[in-house]
Image (cartoon, rainbow, N blue to C red; front, side, top):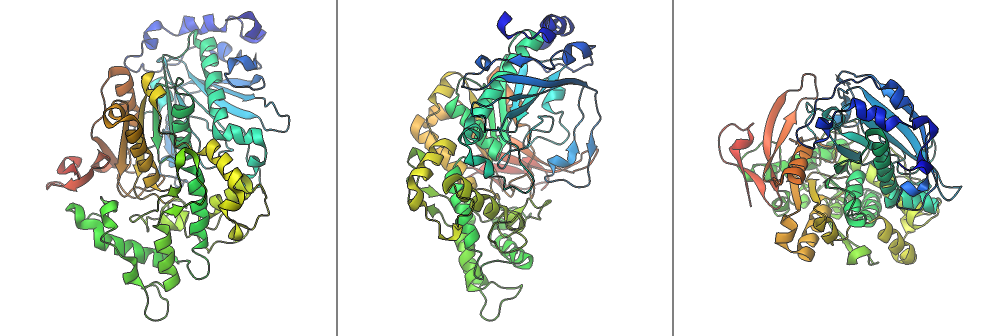
Length: 567
C-alpha cells in the first residue's frame, strides 16, 4: 500500500491479518467455515484511520474509520414481533471485526455518509453489499439475512463473505419527515446513487488493507429501495459488481411517488375502506381467481389472468354502505389503484406511464403494518394533510416525496399539485432517481449477472414496473443476449416484505453458481417456513421465470414438484 494513505495505527496490519488467514479460504471455491482467530489487536488497529478521498472514484471528502471492534460469535434468536418475517430473526454470527466509519461531504451543510463493514476472521474472497429501504437514513449493518433468504440459511458473514452497508448519506431525525434530506443537493445525490458507489470503493480499500488483496468477487443484494440501488449499480457503475440480486425494486421511482399521491387522494371523499371491506375485496378476488391454477390454496398464481376474472363493480352497494359491500366512491378508488398512471411529463428513458397494482393480496394480514392494502394503501385512517404514518405508507411516502423532492416546498398543498407545473424539476429528479435505463450492455460485457424478483401481491410498488423494465431490456438488447446474463422471477401471492405465500429462496447461491461456475438458474424453489427456531418447512412452490406461472398437476399440494411452470 502507498505511504500517503497508511495511517500509523494500521501499519503492518495487512501482514498480521495475512498471517492469520490462510490462502485456502481466498480460493473463491466452496465457502470456508468461519473460525475464530486471535486478531483483536489487528482489528482494533483500524480505528482512527484516515483514508483520502482518492480511494473513491467520485468526488468526496476524506474517510474516517471511527471504530473497529472484534465482536464475539453469537447464537441465533427469534423475536415475537418484527417489521417483517425475516426481521424477527437475529441470525447466528461468527466472530468478526466490525468497522464503523463515515465519509465526509464536499458541501459542509451536507450530512456524512455512514457505513459499516464486517470482516470475517476467515474470508472466502467475496463481498456482499446490502441495499437499504424506504428513504434510508438508517445505517444498514449488513448482518441480517439477505432478501428472500431461507430463514435457516447461514447469513453471508457466516459463510465467509465481507459484508457492508450504508445509511446512504443522511440520518433520520425524530420529528422530521424522512424525505426532508432531499432539500440538500449533495444528500439527494448520495441517496440517488453516489453513496453506494463511494461505500463500495471504501470497502474494497479496507479489504485490501485487511487481507492484503481486493475481493475476487463482489455482489450486491437489495430489496425495495435496495433493489433500486442494485439496478442503479448495474446501470451507472457496470464494472463494480459481478452479481446483483434485486428484489421488488422501486426503479420507476418518479412514477411510483406520483402514483402514491394519486392513489392516496382516491381514498379521500368517501373512498377509504375499513378493514372489513378490504377483507371483502380480498375474499372476492380469491373466489374469482384462486382455483384458476388448478388448486384453491389461498394463492392467486396468475394475477394477470385474474384481471379478466375479477370485477370490483360486483361488490357495489345498492343501499347504505356496510361491511358486505362497497360504495361507488370505494369502487372508484379500487379501479384507480388498478389503473396505470399516465404522466403528463416525459420521464427518464422515455417513460410516461406507471402501471397499476393488483389484483391479489389485498387482504394479506398486515405483518407489523407491512402487508396488503391495510399497510400500504388504506392504512388505519383516510389520508390526511400533512401526511401521517398512520395513513397508508404509499401516501405518507408519495405525498412527502412530492413536497420535498419535486415541489421542494415542505408546505406544498399536494392536493393541488400538478407534475406539469414542476416539469423541469420532475425531469431532473427522474434522471437522478429512476433506474429504468434498459441498456445493460456494459454490465453484460464485463460478465455481470443480474437476477430480479417481483412479488406479485406487492402494494408498496407495482410489480409490473419491474416486469416492464425486464421487457424493455429484452427489447433493447435482444432476448438471447438478455437471457445470457439476466433473469426475472415472479412470486405469486407474496407481498412486498415476503409474507402471504411461499417466499424464501436461496438467491445468493443461485447468483454465485451463475457468476463463478457458469450454472445459469432455471426454475427455482420457493419455501414457506415457520418464523421459529428451529425453522420448519410448511410448504414449497416452484419459483417460475416470467411469464410462466405455477399450475397444479396433482399430488401433494405442499410440495413444489406437484406444480409446473406454464403459461
